[in-house]
Amino acid sequence: MNLNREIVFKSIFLFLICISYFAGYFLRENAAGGGAEFFHMEWLTIQSLKKDFLYTIKNYGEFHDYTMPFPYIASAFLNPFSDNATNFQLSNTMISFSVFLILSIVTKKVFFSIKYIDALLISSALLILPFFRTSAFWGKLDNLGWLFLIIAFYFFNEIKKNIKLEPTNKDLLNVIFFCLASAFALYARQALFFLPISYLLYLYFYKANKKIIITSIISFAIFSIPGFLLMWTWGSVFHAVPGIEPWGSFFGGWINYNHVLKNMPILFSYFGFYLLPILIIEFFNTGYKSFNQTYAKNFLIVLVFLIILQQLNLLSYLGNYSLGGGAVLKFNYLIKNNNFLLLLIFAAIGASALIRFFKEDIKNNLTLLLPLIIVYGFPRLLYQEYVEPLILVIFFLGIKTSLHKIYFKNISFSHFISLLYFALFLTGSVYYKHFIFSS
Image (cartoon, rainbow, N blue to C red):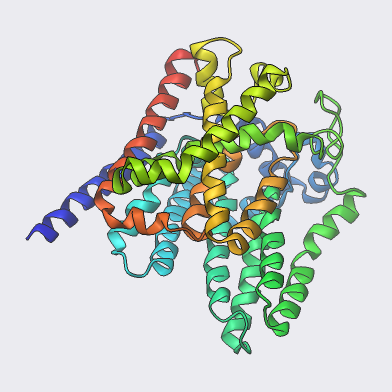
């Protein structure tokens, strides 16, 4: 009886989250801002591709988008609703809803002992993330990258099961499908280039069967052909964008290795922000003493180091962001102009969590996270939308950690903490964009 009551309550909670998602579409919610850019970028590009494909490809830079055009091509020619902006945005909302459903299926496959309603509730966090919702409601194509990333992780986890054994035909098909899904993910969001790097490093460190390695290399080579054809057409890795951007060219300007160290505090703060509810759950489940032993030393070392850098005036740039930097930094500015102490605290939280992951399983977690950290450090400005919901997907589908067992120990309580946390984030984002500043 109690079990049935628990399932009923969970189902009602899930239903309310889904209702809030679709209500956000019909109310034209723009929690992350930038939704109206759709009409000036995505929609114009899609319509231009339909009108004159070759002209659009050859002059792609005129549309002021540094990403590859493959999501636009797919939307223009595979989405039957691409003739009407409203219908297209609704179709994109439904496609993004399917990302939540697919994540729940993959989560259930990875953690087969949990109930499907719990896998749905874990995945439902996507439906209350501001950047995910804004992309969904306004026809922006970012969520296609997350869709293929999740599918790629499914096949990655299947490959891991028999990685050293002589592969069967099914095993080799899993390799091919992983390479295909990760290629689609990369074409949708170029920063997801870290995944093939992590995958190949994983094959090396875990001494994968040679047939798996050869099949992977051949598959990546074949699936990279569209990208190379595009570069051949442009005569460059990315099409030149008219010089209105203050950072100049793509490589050496927007993308530069000099940005990596500068972005580390911000990137670590993103890890701290999205993993904080998981750490809160751990605190309540393990108690103060155990929690303190796990994190306190590393947290204090990182925080003191960052404060020393601040006192040396090496982090002063963190006080001058008008674009990028994330919600924590913007909230810090609201408390006190040009102040970033709160960001340093979240960066120390994120770094402490990462250190814990590396200690738990250095081969798996380092091969996955280190390429991610480096690749995501290259942009001149690091926007929070780049890692939402990446960090949550990585945590549940990629990282090996005992935090999963802690989360599942009292799973109803864990759902409550996690979803409440992200619901508050969504509420704050809506209030900030729609009431403090007009969107």
